[in-house]
Image (cartoon, rainbow over all chains, first blue to last red; front, top):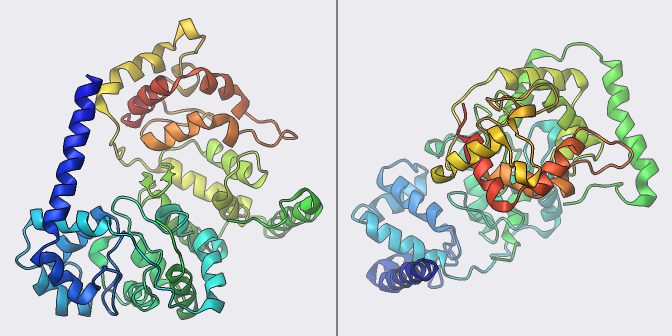
Length: 200
Length: 215
């Protein structure tokens, strides 16, 4: 019984790797034109390396269904994924999730300390929850909740601003409410802090 | 994650800091303002779910819906008094006035969304046996004796029905490290200590699976 289970895990793992390797084809090259050869991101395209596979897959589906509706998504990603099958989306998600991420380090070092406090402790008096509870101690994310650590300041700042501008509403609660109530200075501080986080 | 004033040298300063909210609260005693309560409820629900059904974040965030208000109020005090160690919830709890705590607890107890599920269903039958009958050979009392046959709890004894499976496991496994942590303030968590200690991991998973599906 135990032996069968181990075999099953080995087979599953093996096929996941095989699929990931297979994915390193034309589809991957099409992504890396904008997201960078190591998928570390290239403004305005976010880093994909080390992102949660479930999150990547959900975003690809959201582009396909025209639910992720911010201007750059409409301009670039809606067409890019229009002919992507669910299987290819799944393979690409596994491929990029397995790549090692490197932090963008492009935020403002001085405001990063404020960002750290908001991220780790929240602002109870202003009813802003601590990001760490869902996104994790190193902003590594889990399951459908994205990694934020090491993404670029430019991307993170724009993304946080967009919640308050009414984009990404299909993602549902609680992010539109939380991010929509952050001040410009708090957005800048959080995006700065997150851009420096190094770790898997 | 740092909480200031927690070192032994900072204890006196910490105590003064802890008294401050109590003094302010006493000055403004009376019902919390309705819009303040709504704002704070939204804040709680940002993590605990729009219907307080709980949420699987990086850490499992417990269901508060249908919870006994006395239990909720006692836990919020437990975070402040470091009987229950959790830096995030300490930060949340120590800004709340007693009137606000009462209003929040009453609102959560009145909610009744369906459980979010996700526990292994094949463990439910075994969990039901442990919950209703205990494990006599291991001197484990029936959970139903205190938590009630429907796991709805009573007073300071919490409702377990519909609670998140990973949260229940985390609490039972870590009971002695998370609850009753302030020796100068013993609390009701001591009642649960021997039970949590006696249950093995497999029994914990079974019981957690069973109660997580109860409505």
